[in-house]
Image (cartoon, rainbow, N blue to C red; front, top):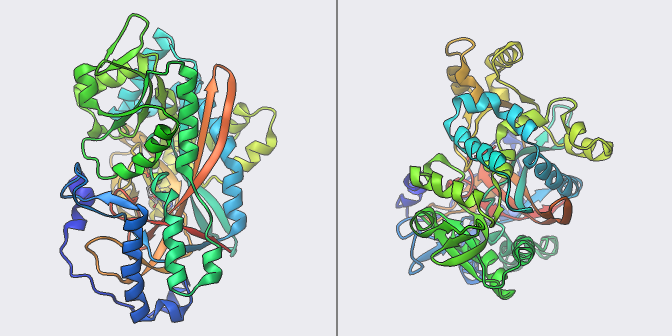
Length: 502
Ligand code: ADP
Ligand code: MG
Ligand code: MG
């Protein structure tokens, strides 16, 4: 799987800089004025400065060739220049985050809602069904841990409406393994240095401070403390292929700075040595685990039969889970679509119409594909205008969505087929493209028309019915060339970026 995601990076290009002419007819805006973007000598200098600065400041990834060793490392992909973003929309995304935290947390505890929302999906989607089986198991057995900690990231794109207005539209909320809180804590310093060398001091001042790593760790630290055992560890449940380890390490080191012990373990390790004692305390390698922080386990490929058992054991245990199984399920695309139905947000926030309006304002059109009249209508709508929509399965990690003619292929199968209920349909969001340069190892630098996606991190800790912490610890801007319709940084498509608020 990793081979596919990072295969492109293997291409052996000799990096050269090309300042393709800016095509005004494309109507893209610019990350920098034209005289900067088209100054080939300057861009070449900045490219070298940028890569070295990223390495010096720790915006790093391991390489595809040696994903489990730090002997050879590389800069993480990032944009040469920060990207413009309207301040009102950025502020809107920040302001709504604590409500999304509350919403996700409420959904995770609402078994009736989750059961109804996912009923059709789990009939056809095996992965969601297996997650749901674990959820059911925990419901029957009774949840042994009243402490909940959620670290999520709500992602948005800016939609350029036909009326000329730009609006903030939520793409999804990631409730498990939301990444890049670590590296995005270091990218502001990289862009500040690039802009200093480029002589762009005005823009330099506009780069926001950002430190999600500290805020994410703060929530984990509180949950660890509430668990109440100094010797118990925080266990990062990590992938076999640890190419993005430094992103984790920033969060991990924030915990060590608080003298909280952290271990990194894979599913395989938990399978081999994990056990529950008679009080359901979780032990791995003989160490008591206070908190499991899942940075893995969000894709079918992450699981063997044994790791499914290990997941169940961890969920059943007294350890705090970040996220627990209910919170994981709250992040499915099907739940997102159900939330967009009239009256659903109101049920979760009966006394807070303002919060409801604030959240709903960020929703794009979302449509059910359940069997029946409503789903049939969605199919007809999609087939009539496939380019206006995105077809989404219950998957994470980028690269899974279906676009354009492929939508017709999937949906025009046997009429009324239950297979379609594995997906939801969403309005396609059309952001304003921006000219920028994207730095990726092995690729020649070239001017690209780019689209950005803003992520807002959320962090909360609840004990029983008391919300003890509910915060928005920072943001992440990811930018990709507009030639790709899908795919994140880990998928080798998007790069790290910073917003410049305009
Ligand atoms: P994943 O959980 O795999 O990240 P997303 O819903 O975030 O799934 O979709 C992956 C990518 O597809 C996004 O990062 C974005 O680039 C693109 N995408 C998703 N939904 C839309 C949409 N409604 N309009 C335009 N692009 C979208
Ligand atoms: Mg996701
Ligand atoms: Mg996404």
